[in-house]
Length: 291
Image 1 (cartoon, rainbow, N blue to C red):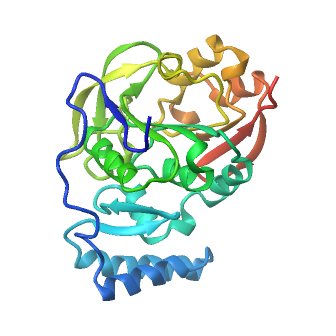
Image 2: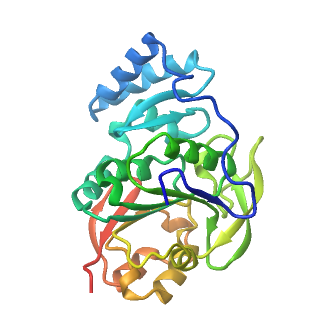
């Protein structure tokens, strides 16, 4: 397995042919503005300045930008995907506490599972710090975003990242993925709110987490990040019930979505021996000592 491997169940492998990296390099002016937004602190004034300058860049932008971030090359499309916009302009605000905790735990032979990988922010961050001995699974169901993920993985030789195109759920088969037009990063197998103009859905393959781990020969998980817009319980309830102790991740980053879960995932994690490490506006970080 190498850094450009990927798997798209039931479909041709690989994204459409894309222009080489550097085709969409920022102009000198854009580069200066992006650098300015990335230097801003997390104070109220720093954020206001960063967002103002970001808006100036977006006004004249009609294509993605090829940049370096988290020590990795990425092609980022900041249109209708909040995650890409955050990583491009203000990576210092992108789950900083969560990434700091991850970095402190990364070691030789690190195994990281990224559920809801989007375009690879977390996966490539871990790859940059873990080196070639890491094993990283980046799981993303949305076809357009998956193609971007695969492209970004292929730009970087560091780490071993495998992208897998499927939704994770409580059973194998097919599921409907709902994709809001305003933010591609909010795609979910659960409908949220009232569909708007441009929203659409697509059928995607569905797998269980245990099934994926068995297929990939994973015998332990050092860290797992799960951000699937309220469908975390569909994945974690059967996994926590059926997984052997050696497969329970030592560190877990889970999106806050209690109002959309039918089962309280945090309570289940606590019952499984996890303790709270940190809580941010978007996520809960929990840890479990190895048995």
